[in-house]
Length: 256
Length: 232
Image (cartoon, rainbow over all chains, first blue to last red; front, side, top):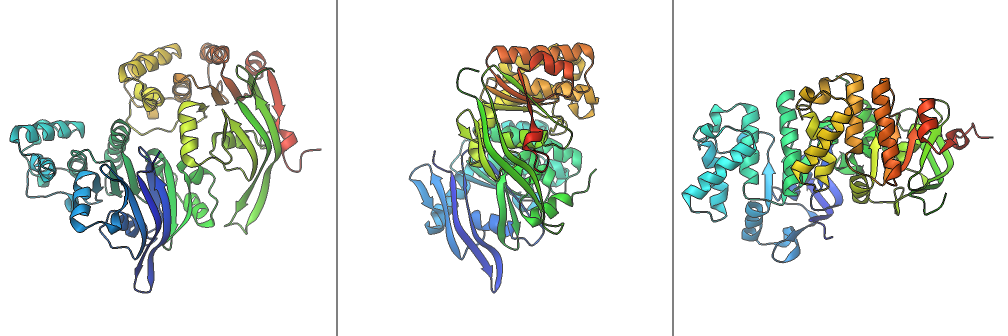
């Protein structure tokens, strides 16, 4: 099987400081990769370099495109990359306000992404938006409300609907459950697990919450000072950590 | 035993290295070796701390091996890439641990059906199988739509067992499957184990319940002989 994403030697520096250095991994269809590490460890830099929000200094991000097979995203033209971001990729921000248009209705937020890939029939767009609001458990009668009228958890679910409506194959998530209270977090985790399974999605999820990665990610990378210090099966890395930093991270979690 | 072993372990060694405690090296396993044939149930015995759970976790790929071979259905877990271990766990190797780990708020019946859904079984069929197992394990029907996180210890244990037996894994690891169960439910679990053996599952387990062990296990392996510093 061809990996959906092959990352090779990805490096990003901020002047003399290292953002992330020499990161390599393969991600296969249907796999969820978790990235953990403390603040400043480079995990968000890595995610943004993968998603093309930041320009990496070196390395390759090879994506298995539908039309032409594996291609280095960094070598693509800007329009090609933007098309990929609209059709095959999705990015869920920690703060839903960064991923939603707050002045547009919930239905409009979902429909806009469909229109960006060519949908024009108003009835179909509204129908699909309704379907997706239902899938993320937002009542259909809220379709004309703006996200400003939604709770934080609803906004996050709306952002997920907006991102997944076009049937992407790869989703980047930056602390998707951060800032939500625990009961909302659980519902979102269940939703994400179901979507990953039903749509065969692949995902890269950055978080500092070890309980979230245990339940959501198949594989885990641990970052420290811009380097990946350990990688493996999620439960193996958490239960039998090999690197001193991972051992410290795992043993530092407070028991509820 | 005739036939090719389903689970075959040889030369297995492991140390724990505690980097934040002066780099202390704790040897926990030396030259472990055993095999389990299809249809056979083998019990791991030995004093607490001898390494029974460690060995089970290594077979499941939850703990890394330093050296040696852990062959399960043709895959060497000690060498396999994470996605090979994931595929093995999905289709071939089941594990009933003592702890139920689930996403809060997910209904019990979905928790039990999940391994089947992950294998691509139709939702109706998977849920029917889950309901059947929950019924056999005497989980009251009114609890099926609730999350098991608030259940009693014995109920959680039975949900875990239902989940572990939902798919007919060719290899199965059982960590004290009858602990904290009453006589009636213990009987159900022992019958499930006997049914799994009859369909050809290779089972490796830890049973502190001696009567249960005598009834379902064909052989006993004393892990003390693999414990560094304890072996003769």
